[in-house]
Image 1 (tube, rainbow, N blue to C red):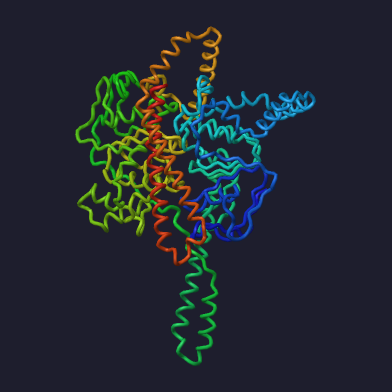
Image 2: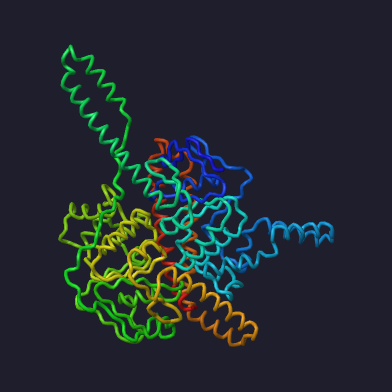
Length: 630
């Protein structure tokens, strides 16, 4: 089991977790939740042995094998399937020993090793690796492709598969759904439910947590507290705890006011001085109860649109894509009217983002007609907008730039609804996290008073409280919505109908997420069946090579740009590693190093920002490449 006793964890001079005790039993599945920056990643680092407790103790069996998802993937010639198989270290070790035994012509040892490999089901490893890759969205003909051919998002899937195939006693997953589409998320849920080891999972996807885990470890006010049940059960228990705490706090406040009034009234009178001192000591000994915090710091909502034309926006017999050689969608017919609340379903690379970009006017139609109501106000959210924030400007600057009639006090008040309080509203976006940037982009959209919302993965980087606030705001929104999300709870809470993007077509999907899950299963079986027929009948290899060459030619400029970004990101990550190594040295927190500490902290924030921004650009390029190849 994992046991924490009076555990305290610091990062530099900042205390994140203080005097916390909890126990995670073997084979339990635990969701680790808390606001951004509360210490979740630091606790992961401690479990991995990368960070030592500053006080207390954190222990687990020394024999446990631990697996986590690597954050970087080298550009390898090794095939995707072989790379994933590397995750089974026991098999690879036996495989090497077997090769050596054969080289040495040691028949007895060879027989022993073959038996050991058979005992651990090692000979089924290629099939198991293939099953994992299929579940995560890889096609059969991609399994032999070299790792270097895959984009950043797909390499993260390879790393996830490598962690899943390991023989781990403890599996640590930090936001595993971030690079997945909905079908891969649904598959991963099923796989983790069958996992027999101990799982600790960081996720901001409440439906994913509800489906997979049985306990919640919540970090708040520097304390880690373990709750039984899934995320919904945790929220209920926490509400009850906060209500009880609030009642105790109110009672304590009344007692404190009474004692203070007595002390102030009789302190100067000799006959009452002793009693006053006694009451003063009693006042000082009252337990330090914090007021129960409000469930969320986020209180924003969309204003009711002043007018709602009919229709708002439509596409008629439209072709969508990036040029005439890369048509992604054909004959698209879609009309958005007031009250439309549509969720887009479809595999990664099928064209969902292309459709939203076409609706938003971000890319021109290749053919067909786009009708847009006069003076229609569109609120468009996509990941690339996070990089379009003005470098060096603060959230207040952005709000005033968008709405010049607002003064700074009004801008700060508005930003407070999105969690930007105090000095946060005046800090440069250069030092902001991905979640903070996403909140600022959403704030700017709300400020526009949109009639139509086009939202492409709006919950990426957002914590659970902000996701819940967004759900509530979208439920009350009076205009129309089109939404792409891998967050099932968001989809089920905010849309009334689904459209399926598949095989170059956009069509109404008659069903819900469960029906979509069944469609995925049926489609996958059909795909595998088709692949088998093709293999049996044989493939025109010359024609296949020509097709592959044509695809490589079309995607070459995008690949070149992606490769440049990859090199830059790798360089910044190396620099960031050096800075963080320096910040892990306690000497830099001495008084005489204050100026150097300030420089390094700013450099750390700047490098993190560069990595985050350019990873998003890289993923945008990767998606375009994937859409070309689909």
